[in-house]
Image (cartoon, rainbow, N blue to C red; front, side, top):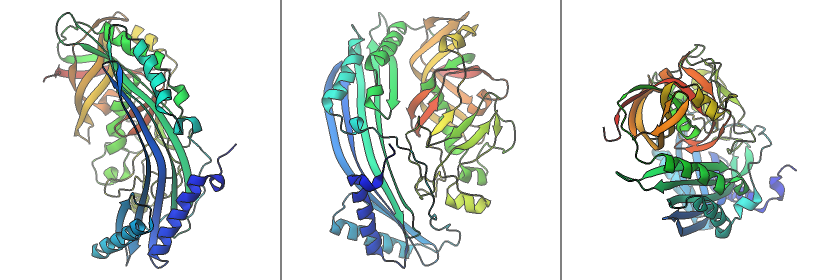
Length: 456
């Protein structure tokens, strides 16, 4: 049965709060207001023992006003009482009066129809520490002789957006995640870590034992790693590493503002990536976790960025869409200075098992994770960072030895260029990265440049 906001107490509280703010601002000012009510909970563990449980109920109101020809200001508060909302309105209006007029302000979104999606699970929203502890216990139990650390979280909220243009949207969502490592002692040198993560809208999807088995196997296999000379190696990147790889193309490439300013790598209509690469954003996909509308109230749908390696689309908010003479794509994050950003990104998967990807490699590296990633040049998408939580040598199609962590310096677009993608896995999953949650498989790439050890 589809979710009906009219019968949801939190949604109705959100609408009532938004209406109070709209009344305080008055009908002569263009106004957009959002209200989010939810709960965040976390069970953290280290040294194979739970040491912290946290939970908090939160309410958050955000206000945007536009006065006198595009003088715009935003303000937010966690106080939803009368005095708190009054201060919110007074502060936003006062700030707007100090801003210069903006003749290119796109104004507020008109009413629109949002997709009927509901990335929500009641049991996850109300999950207690005991339920999260059961997932943690299953993870820890797989690591006999190892030390375990990480967290299991459950979050959820109901979100309402209203404006003076008649937009009245509501949505709800939940997210559960286990993100953890096993650590194995080494006979010489530092201990080694093995990593596992699962993300879902539902706590019941978190199989702590399965995640723990993967992490424990990596930790044990990583003991006493060898040193490997810097150079370009064929690689199999597991989903966590692929999520890191896609962060900067999404953030600074398919961003329409970056494109208009000439700092994006994207050339629309050109074959820039391998023909096996399909990239799109879709918050309405049942596998996603996003809302069916963006921070401006524009409805979301599927937006293609790459089809068969050809760059075909950009992420627009209302401002960049107006300047480009196109429709907004529903990618506002509420920050016009940054531009639109794909927050529910999908990379199309293939039909090869992870072991089959490895079997095709004569000599290369299996990469679990990339971290401390920093972009050096957005135009060429040259990024540098480090491996961690499991780096292994592949020889003659088999994983043979662990390798000490390495620094990489690589153009992401170069690594995904035509002819460079040698295989796509059938293991696509949701992965949390710094930019949100993406849905990605493992990748086999012809070349990845490693430029030094983890200290270089």
